[in-house]
Amino acid sequence: MMPDTLAPLGKIQLSSQMGITPLASESLGVRSLATHVKTANTSILIDPGVALGFRGQLHPHPSEYLLLKRIRQKISDIAQTTELIVVSHFHHDHFMPFFVNYAYFWSSRNEATHLYKDRRIWCKDIRQHINYSQQRRGYNFVRSARKLAMEIKYADGRALKIGATLIRFSPAVPHGEEGTKLGWVIMTAIRCGDFSIVHASDIQGPMVKKTADWILGQKPDVLILAGPPTYLSPERVDPKVLGMAADNLRNLAEQIPMILVDHHLLRDQNWHEWLNPIQSHASEKGNQVITIAEVLGLTDNLLEAGRAELYEKSPPGKAFDTWVKRIRESRIQTPPPLDE
Image (cartoon, rainbow, N blue to C red):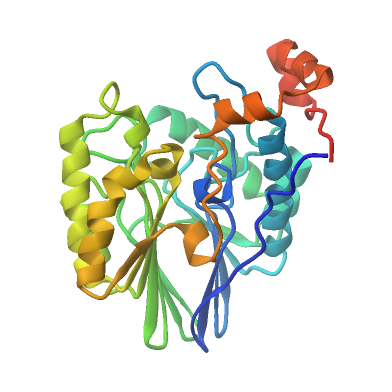
């Protein structure tokens, strides 16, 4: 029997009118930044994607798949009571596609239909500020979602009001540093009463000052953001760019009461080395910079970063090894054998 690593749903209650429920992230064991926000008169599910990734020479461990499956169900369940779904960009750890892929996303057309049916969807514009791969994925997503969603609209730079809740979307900002080949994303600011949050997927720090300036302009009480992928440095991420991200985050930490840093940064077992100076600086200002697991009172569950140790301590069985060795299409179409 594998250990049950599914974190309980934990809610960050900002006020009687607004609460945040983090659903998935690297500190909770999977690739994601899925977040549910409940206000006095509406509910918003931001980036309902969840994924696993190949790391080094190791395929995801069975315990990662078990967690992926259970979190996928958790996100699907909470979507049924959600009015608005937001998709910040078209990387598969941020939205569920309408095709079968059990190897990395635990997705299928039926699962996607259940998730998006009768929901209002606001997503990244696929016509501008988008790279080719995301445009292709976005086109296929919009074409399928349009047939079953209550509405689907492009969100870049727009805003909408639902009762007392104001939802504002940023213009497209870089997925990391300026000029990155990874494309663009949109951020989401939600305000109800005297409290507000900003959800900032894949801004990676942020690496760009203009992105940080937009965040500060929303005056958030809580900021949820993707830290930089320090695990890819120096080969694929310039240490100078990581320094720029640290400077921008330090500035944000001076002015925002609570910042939840997660996602790419928590793919690095040594993430503390990059974040600790910023956490100390925030603390001096009376603010907090912590991970999603920590704000929920949990221990960081870095399954991807610790994958080699997982394989060493809990070697997969023969059935799982056989599944991994199958031809690609067969593996994608068939769920892995899991001891639940």
